[in-house]
Image 1 (tube, rainbow over the protein chains, first blue to last red):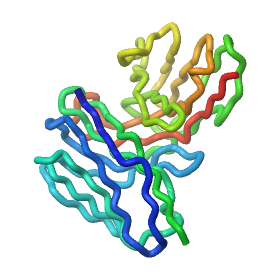
Image 2 (tube, chains in turn cyan, red):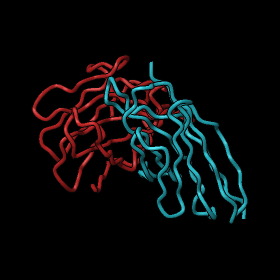
Image 3 (tube, each protein chain N blue to C red):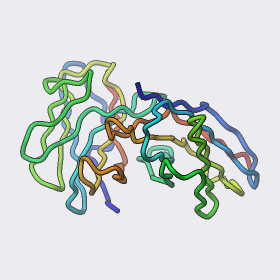
Length: 111
Length: 118
């Protein structure tokens, strides 16, 4: 079946880089996504990557995809206190075409 | 993109009652979905709301418990029926402009409805 896992918590200092990791099991995934959820808010799509790419950069965000290991990461450069949120990895299942979400990683940015 | 509003934003309900959550989008969308996010957990798809026909439910969710309406391309409701404390969750509406079988459908999410059942 489809399963997506993330570490639960990451703490960084303001100005440092953050790296949030995600693993998934569906080798036929088409797209992989990173969403951000701030307290009391819905989910905001940050970025996505097509499964035949291995890297995508968008301003402070860098997504790395290792399809062989089914490993996805999100790097946030120069992390700010406003980046504190829960980050969800999601994959679009190749068979079902549905979004499968990871467990979410709480990023805490210390001033 | 799409701007999605949900009503109510939060509610506290008594066991055995029902609550209807509304989702309004500022533009016509192809697909509308309802998700549940239980405390400290990830998002689980409840159902896909289909315009003019019955919703498509995921495994573990049934129409009697979660009736859904979608009368047009911009509005949907989810009812949580005969509530118990286990239904305490955030319920999120999500939309996309793509077709069901399209390999890329950017999904936008509403702010969620935080439900507490006593």
